[in-house]
Image (cartoon, rainbow, N blue to C red):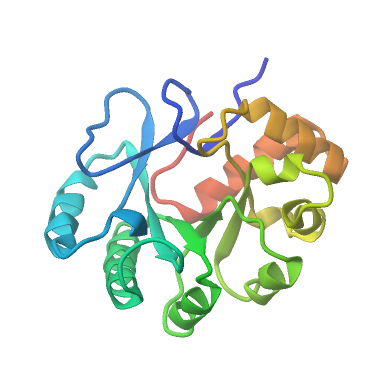
Length: 214
């Protein structure tokens, strides 16, 4: 069985899985993302940014995130926006993509994109395809996970028409194997799993200074 890249996971031990860590955690063997999730921001977030800056010197950390916006859970949006912009600046300086958490925050992302241009991967995307279309003029990418396993989901509808050079795949914390996600994407797109693997790796290595060799 081929080793399939998982671009956002909370399950350790995957050779090509980008394991998401908090700043209190330390990488061991593997590849990682690290950031300040909007759920856990507090008044000390600027101190946490200093810690994150030091952690990002580790070349095994391939992306900044999860970070972003949540209109349901987390501190006031002013804090979320400030923390996101600080992390985005770090990601840009290192040539790393952002792993975006975005719940009821599309307008905040669009506001950010009016002033900034850098690779952002919206993880677990499951909004109406019109939302995806509205972002195609920007370096925003879409990571598809468990929602493509649900018949007639927004994620399925968007995957069918999303440009292939904008596509990634993930398990997040779903408990599903990454093979199930690729298998479903293969059925939806009518493309071999091997081709989807190739496309996803090419997409990553085009937007990140820290490459995945698989």
